[in-house]
Image (cartoon, rainbow, N blue to C red; front, side, top):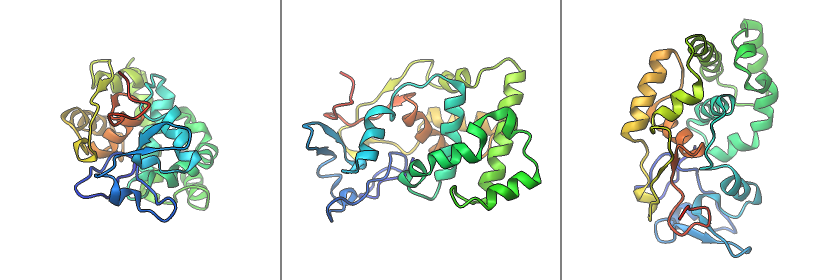
Length: 223
């Protein structure tokens, strides 16, 4: 997901937005948690936007083991590269519509005409390399499936099948990538997946609960 821009903060946790004129990212190192009106403390990056707060509470860091859902998340993180995650999150339903629910079998059959239709769709990120990369990744997904390997198994193998709980105390403690994301990125690239650099892969690992990087004191942090 997108990156905070506070000091030496990492490039993988979702990006903070301004709230009530306050640049949350600038203050993140001093106050990495936000206390919200519901009495809950949350990681600073969700700000005070109810939409983003719900994503933080209900999705980010929750273990996901469904192959299709993991595939969707990885592709969306690829589309996010260079943009804020909230931009992609707000366009997610448009992406799902445009890419046929991120069904790999359907996507793998996309031809040049479909790619051009996607490039004309103002509801998504119209980046040709990313659109064509998504199609290539769908084909790689099916190749993997033909080999008898579930995409979920491939992803979770990177963390030996169990969520790695890190519980950072400061934004600076959250890495942009890890040895596990580097290794998984290399494997995915070797299989033909696109836009799967180590930072993008780590963002997907955070979002899908392969790692738990909720800050210490966040109400979503596991004991």
